[in-house]
Picture 1 (cartoon, rainbow, N blue to C red):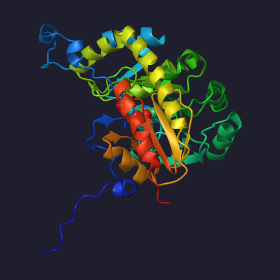
Picture 2 (picture 1 turned 180 degrees about the horizontal axis):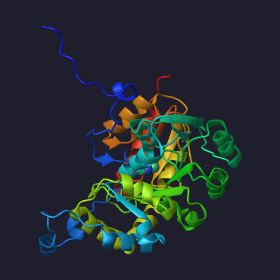
Picture 3 (picture 1 turned 180 degrees about the vertical axis):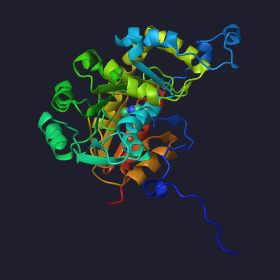
Picture 4 (picture 1 turned 90 degrees about the vertical axis):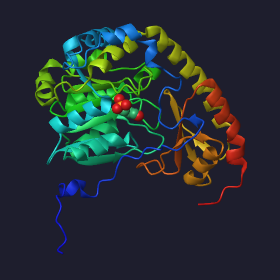
Length: 362
Ligand SMILES: Cc1ncc(COP(=O)(O)O)c(C=O)c1O
């Protein structure tokens, strides 16, 4: 029998590998930068209110959610694209402004999905390797822009996995000098840092800003994100948007999640206090280099031992952190999210055992 021929994706995706998530079992899961305290949906919806959520009709535009979010961020409701997690909106950015023969400039090390989504959309990634410490200066950013001339440039601030911000003037200088480049600012962690470029958006209509419910809003499981887009570009996004992409249930719950400013204030305070405690503990470990963080996670680089070995030693104590050593520019690095106080106690208590054992040299 002749071998049956099967459809093939375009060449760019033929060898593509799935996004790696670490679904390993552990008591302390501090590997994905989620909010660690349980956030049950019953906090937001009563059984009676569930009766009011009608599933046979398609969802509406999310007017209530748009209103809450625009009040929170100081935008107009119509400046928001809503999505099923910010990743979906990031993909839209690359589909609409990237694609065949178009380049995305990334400053590495950074969030790996920007590169993956660029390629899924058919575009090409151009890299400026900043390395560690992650200092994206104005000169460096402008030189990279002049070298690459990208259709899209991405700034993640604060940046994942490095935990530090990129200065506003770096991003705004690029937006100003390259008005024909789409400047995507990923603000997934900006609440923790108390920074945002949303207030500057009217001056730079080529800048779009992504936000997520997965971090300080403690709703990674809900899958909600928003993209803030000026009217000058909004039509290109709405033309390509999937209709009804956010469910009725999600829209309803998200509006309540976003309204809960008291919970956000509690989380910011907790994250800041716990981050200081975890940073102080990590800084006492002589065999690692710890990078300063303004987020809910901390990056550190090993001076000895291998990331796989150190990761496994944490896991042996039922603490799951993230091995990011294969991310470009992150050689020998691991990342730990800030957990609950009890989880951070477990992480800190594990440090002596993990780092005391004689490391095998690389
Ligand atoms: C920088 C950055 N952007 C976006 C996301 C993903 O967000 P979402 O859960 O909204 O798809 C993450 C998640 O870790 C992230 O680190």
